[in-house]
Amino acid sequence: KNEVEQSPQNLTAQEGEFITINCSYSVGISALHWLQQHPGGGIVSLFMLSSGKKKHGRLIATINIQEKHSSLHITASHPRDSAVYICAVRETTDSWGKFQFGAGTQVVVTP
Amino acid sequence: DVKVTQSSRYLVKRTGEKVFLECVQDMDHENMFWYRQDPGLGLRLIYFSYDVKMKEKGDIPEGYSVSREKKERFSLILESASTNQTSMYLCASSSTGLAKNIQYFGAGTRLSVL
Image: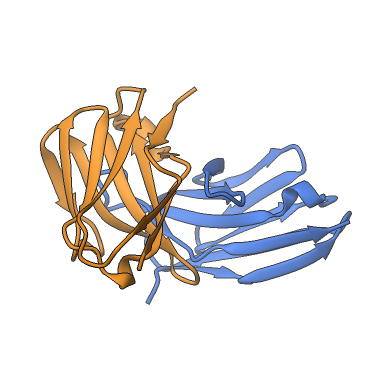
């Protein structure tokens, strides 16, 4: 069983819609990351969270440590937001900087 | 900017061939990682290395080996490629201390084994 679960697996939205992706995890963590992967493969880090909320442009990430849950929101979505979004956690017991990854959410934003 | 470079974007090999995937990073990072990514399964760790000549098995090391002779270079080796190793392979690197929370990824190598 994967220790990091994402939902939904796939999401299609119309341009301008508000998008939410959820991530639940079952282990104690020191950090949670949201990553973006565009077609072609390259992965970039969007946010690193250990508590609260972070905002960057139209992207907002929140985390509830007690509930072991995080959400990534995209406001006023745009076709260029189409990508795979991946949740990754670093366990408190890890000393090597290893991550556990969710399976990813494929987001398609149509014009 | 940190750069992690994987030697090939696409690779086609035959069953039984020995395959080398190369990864080079330019930020003097201590830690390097090899993942494979399959639909519905996400990224799974094959091997990682925390120093030159040091390696640790990840979650799915079977059928793979690695080599780290220089700090900037981490190689993944498929000794005898099989069709179930067809996948996207991603390399990443990170520093130590607090900075080990950030991994920097290469663009990936899509390997097809026929």
